[in-house]
Image (cartoon, rainbow, N blue to C red; front, side, top):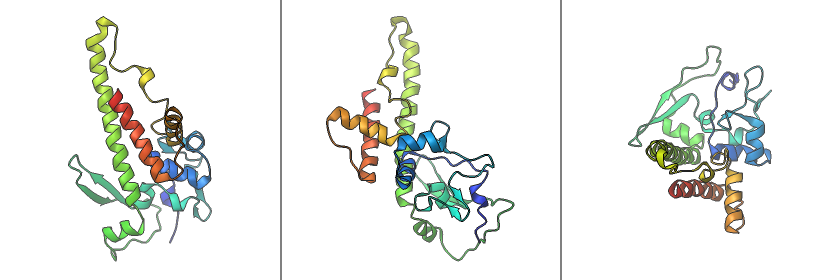
Length: 206
């Protein structure tokens, strides 16, 4: 039974890979998608006045083939620690949920059915990069305090990615390819690899 309650009153966080999948589904750029379909500077999917997902139609998800990881996993929650140990928990269903729960399959089979592998790999890679950026900014703040008397800082704002670039895959890859004088990849997996490499290069150069 599909009651669609899982598509209401939620916060659906998305990473650059998920944004790129959804943008491709709609036939638009990630820049356009972030501007039109997200909140929180591109970190959450936009919900309407009734607190329903923008992509929820009368018969269900309008972008089901490219739905984000959290939507694929529901009603499971994915967790892992700093040792990369992964485990799952069951999310308490909405009080009005009319979905049918059962124990006739394994978590492994459920994950395979939901085709989550590409999503979990991308999520883990982008999370690692996010932590690297956070560590860099923390180190920068410490260095700024130490170098305040000399008037210099270790990382200038001009050296940072353009506003939102680390979330906006198309913009980051396009700018990188323009600087390098090379064509932009059309394949999403290749574009994702290049986007992650662009972020790594920025971190190293900073």
